[in-house]
Image (cartoon, rainbow, N blue to C red; front, top):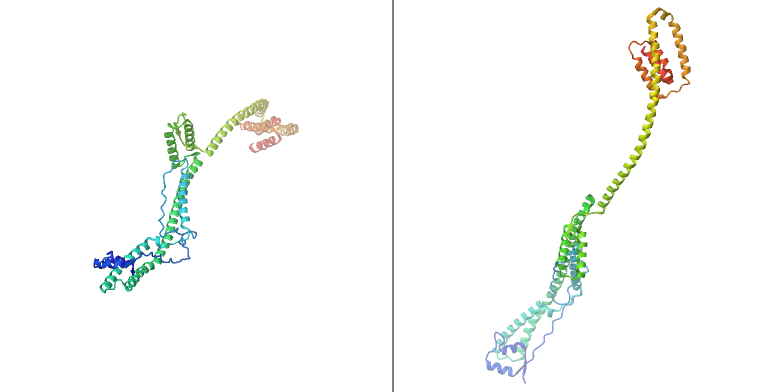
Length: 449
């Protein structure tokens, strides 16, 4: 009856180990009297871990773990590709980063599946298992050499020893499974952390791009508010010009409908950065754009100019009417003043004639003048009283009275005039003075003479 032998004995008898083979004839006889059935080694038991790996404490607790399998492939960072130029680089930049972040989120979702570790697919365990098998094979060969030298190679003792050696090395390989599991678990956490870092960097870059775009745009807006002209950010102008150049390049070979679309798009793009087709054949001219506030300033200036012109006409009409009224009043005043001056001049002439006569009489006979002084005084007082009574019913214009008062004072300053002559002059002009001015004139005569 053929004896069953193990794998190590089979390899030894076939010369598959470093030490083995021995006597060829003897080995052939041993193989002829033995049977070998290849064994299928079941996978060692997988340690059970009910704790689902989570994201590191510095990351979101909702992060998952690696998908089924032993060692997950490291995530590939999305590579940003050059997008077609658009009229709004800020939006395009935002969209590019959104796609990158969406890809990273998909990776995170795939890592959130519960971990199912299979050592038979773990390269680390497979390598350890191969090393253990090689070591067991070598140890079994050495043991069979020893047993062969004792003549008990094909015996139950040999089979037991070889089986013990194989189990020993298999157990050593299996003992490393928990360590391999922990390594795979840690790798899953590291992968999640790496994706979170990539996601955070993407969000930071996106925000910086948005901030830079907003800062450039706000600078242009603030400048537009101050000056009334708006210049788009350089990135926008560059993107628009590139898109317009691409449209112009595609125009010659495009269909009539496509040519119309490209032309309309270029007109729209040019207008967005202050350009216009001045010739109608695609020859665009660019310049600062007038803002709404600038247009309001222009409208305000135009309105002010219209209001000024209107007011100028109104003032001219009003001034013309006022000047005519002034001229009429001036003419009336001049006529009245001339009449008053004429009357006052006649009165002054009469007064000076009377003064001359009185002076002559005074020079002719000082004695008579002294004797008649009392009578003259009484007559003067009487005439004065009569003049006052008479003047009480006469109303003189205050301005005319003031002018006459000043004129009489000028006459009284003539050298050589006496007090009596001054009183006579005042009495002669009584009708041309108001009561207050006449009283003031008498007081002035009393003071000066």
